[in-house]
Image (cartoon, rainbow, N blue to C red):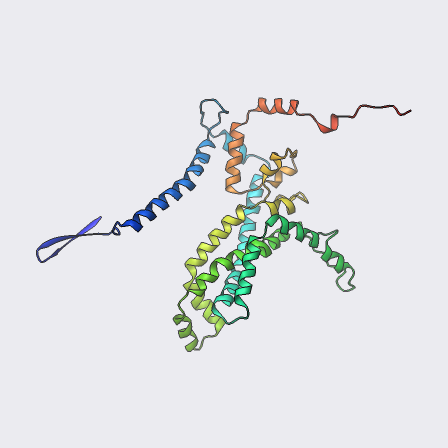
Length: 317
């Protein structure tokens, strides 16, 4: 869209688009390539989720796979538990992340660079190893912290259970829930213009009031982006829920692909432990759409059962 103006009798055409130079063309190509790299596989997954034909057969599209996926036992409860974990985690982690980022970037706290580096280290620690370590500390039966608490007369009745909803929330918080926000928001807080904070303090506002009424509203776009990235990271992880949610057969966020890949039998009680991520649901729908009942029966009949295999008897003389 262009706008025509007249200057000294000459018509000047002004375009709303930025001038096309080398940098703009390069960025346009990069954005288009990354968009194709991300959106094309997602579009294929969504389209193939409607394909009910098996491999090497002409495509047949329908809603059978979607109906089977949403009619599975415990899927709606798993969806709600996944959403609840994401909401509770963000409600608890966001205030801590904002406050710690503000302390590191906008105050004269001691050793801010070392503390920020510590959050970076906690972000890159493998989630599976750290979850095993916290299980060793807070296992309700054999955890080190619970064992120490039983030896104390006053705190002998206190017993932490990491295999619960709040145990999963706590592991996410001390793992990546807070560190993700700190490492992303601290540079943005550090580059914020200090004139508004100085004007607020000159008007008599305290540091906490300035944080709530000036700093946080000014950083709202950054906070929204960080929350969205944190939600994506939470829904893309499954090891914490797999280790802590299935222990007591609690229908929390557990990836069914991890169980099916290892051939673990999934009963009616284990069906409630489905992971409710959207990508996992689409994968499950795609698998259900391509699976044939006769192929499943043949696979089950051919696969040997461990309980039916017995060693040959040998007489001992």
